[in-house]
Image (cartoon, rainbow, N blue to C red; front, side):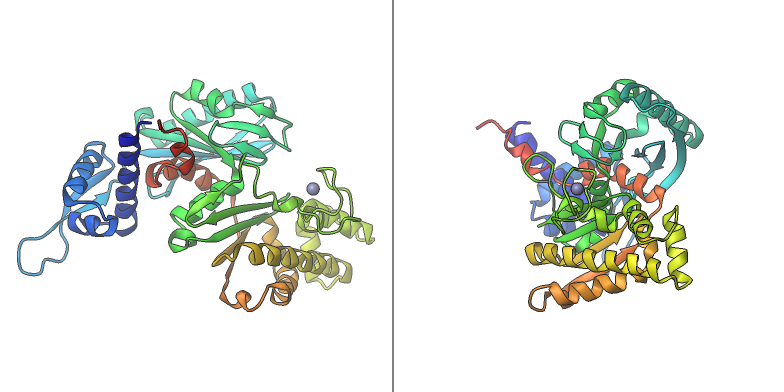
Length: 392
Ligand SMILES: [Zn+2]
């Protein structure tokens, strides 16, 4: 992208984001909030209106003179699809520009290899559009969230722990089949995006999203940007070593955080302590019924989790931590000891300033998250890594 175009894209996203967040809003207020000149605002909003993303509304509070013309987001003109790709199934959601889910569809994945999976997902997307009676031309893009190490710039799945993929150009495979832009990211980063664009992270510049479930995931927003590390492999919170002499983790190391907190490991620890439970729900039910082994398993997990979170807080000092994922079903059996550990280990009095939110999660939240990969490209300024590619 040439420098001029890059700056224009930056300003366009900034304006669109202001209209999304504060609209309906007058052009003069957009100029004030964005710091752009009125002429630049007029030019860029004209383009947004022509593209059908924004429309003019003649209403609002007029103090005396004629009513001001306000600009609002035209959420119903364009759509995006989010796909949460799991091991055996995928959840697809069609959303508008406000991230409202309009239709959903599930696809059973009968095969694991990248090509058959992309065929099945492409058919699922067509079915979703048909059922919602949305024209393919109105589809702005598709976002896919999956577990593993993802190079989101290149759209390549580097490593996926669940289906054994390595260096699969999955975005390209879907683009070939569906003829629209496809974006790929780690599913914790997709949740982080949806919180940043539409959730509690909207007005917070520094926050963390931590997921617990099959594994432990971390999304980091630092100074308003999703932080990924030098090669996109940052945020592997689940594999920080908590006990060097602990149980051997899937990654080969001993005593990773996951081996204390992730649900399959909770079951294993309960089993080692002599309690036979086959599902996480069963473990929580046993704890509720007062079983001491179940309570101790969840409580130990909470204490270790709280200690690990304290390390993150001491390093990053976020204003907000959102804890989500299937694992939150453990409830206070895990979170009470977690909070105790945080109160104990967080440096100085930072703990008092941090907002902690525990949010249950469903498959459609994951799919909304995936859709927000596309929405982030529309509303968020182009990322800094693109600047590196500018001609000098
Ligand atoms: Zn590990």
